[in-house]
Every structure is written in structure tokens, then in C-alpha cells.
Length: 195
Image (tube, rainbow, N blue to C red):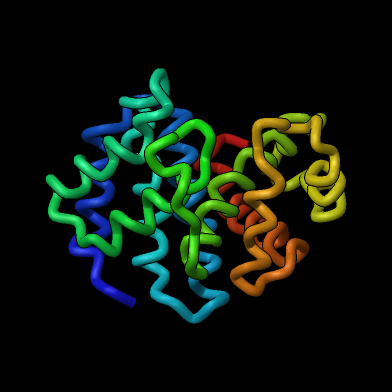
């Protein structure tokens, strides 16, 4: 895997500098642990995949009211921080082919890590929503079977694109396996996310 030119500590410092919303911080952390778990499955560098997950929405608090700039502003932030083109390209790839980001609309994801990032960061929304509808609002109460049912119910967490999540299959991982890895990784940080 190519170099990122940003250490885990530097990535955490960037999050402290640019992310103020607690919910965004949690989403970044959730995506980080999910990406680390996926890296482990693929025998890839867990720290590098984790950094990519942690930084993927580094510009969200700055662009949430203007989504067409999401991922565009991230390029500026990451370049200024000394990030490699490899890191920047993989981070902005989760915005490829999006109606919300016209500047990236024509681009397509093309690698294992890009499919995994887009699918993982999207699935975290369904997993968290699944915990919130449990009587005890706990991640530990979410089973793989109930998560599969929620995934099939397109009106549940409707903003989470099932099509993007299914890109996990382009990375040669079955949907069931992907759901299990995501669920287990978030259950592992349940106390951090308060669920």
C-alpha cells in the first residue's frame, strides 16, 4: 500500500481542528474501526485503512450546508496537511458518482479500499439506526438477522444507500459478511458511542 504521509496522531489532530459536531466525530470513529476490521480481513495495513476511515469526512462540518463542496474542501485540508495523493484520492472516492457532488459525478470507484470505504461509511448509519430502535437502545441488542431485515427495508434509514453498501461485493466480500464485520466492529466501541 502506498504511503499516506499522515500519521494516526496527525489524523486525530486534524479531526480535533476541523470537526466540532459530536455526531460527526462519532461517525468518523465508527468508520475508522470498521475500516480497520476490513483491513484485517484483507491482510492490509490496519492503521492506514483506519486513517482513511477517520479522515473521510474531515470537511463535513464545513460543508454540510453546501454538500456540493463536500470532498472538494477535504482535498484542500488534506493537501495543506501534507497528505499524499493516494490518501486524498481514496478519501474523496466516497463522493464519486454522487448527485450531491457534481464535481465528482463522473468519477467511479475502482479499488478494494474505495469500495470498502464508501460501503462502510454508509452502513454505519443503518447499524446505528438499528441500535436506536432497540428497546434498550444498545448495539449489543442488534443481531445480524435483524440488521439484514433492516437492510432489506429500504424505508428504514432511507438516506443510507443500499446500492453503495452493496459495493462491498465489488471488493469480493459478501453482504452478510460485510454486515457482520460492521456490526461486530461497532459493537466493539459501543461504550465510546454511548449505545
